[in-house]
Image (cartoon, rainbow, N blue to C red; front, side, top):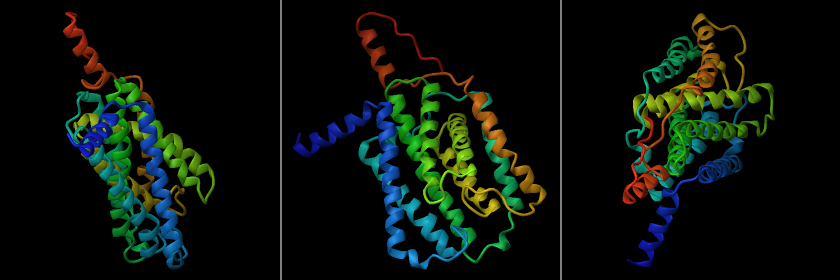
Length: 296
């Protein structure tokens, strides 16, 4: 084995062992790079930004959302490939989903459908809608791969129960969104967003468990954020002005997500078959003991 191969092996073994602090580290480094990219974009092309906020024009959407989050998505994908975590992140879920977890799928889906119907697309400048939808794809990929991807896998690798996995990965997800306070400050809407994103993270975890794949969590997230932005006219802002019936009903989705996220905590069970649990089981078998299979 060459030195390069040995270094690669040690690097991958480091991540293979997992750990909650490694999940936090991945999210922290990702956010630092993401914010750094955003700062650099602002320095280079900030003069092109027009009035009206992130959705004020196509160039605003491109510079505020598409470029920074798109680069962030590339960064996390490259990390997952280099760390060896990608195989487990994109594999079928090691713990079976339960029937009730499909409720989370419905809770996330109905606001998306209603917003897609109710959004006043004509009220936006040319190019804003398609670019916002593209940004949504990048958001879904980046944020899900950091949290339901890297964080969940690292926590499972360390042998944590699925309840701990869901809670810690969703906490990381919520804390990532405190970055939205940069510039605007901790407004009431931003403060409300933090517990909401925790519960939304729980729902995304349930979507992943119910469907058996992180891909569907990515799709759900990729549709949630842009439709929410377009329905309210901004990021982490309350809807202004009169809204149609579809958007009024869709707004109840925020509360159903919170309710689902809280109630689900009392029912999440199980433990993945790999990580510390698998290691302990193998050790027990070699010493003649009978390993207790994980609760699925």
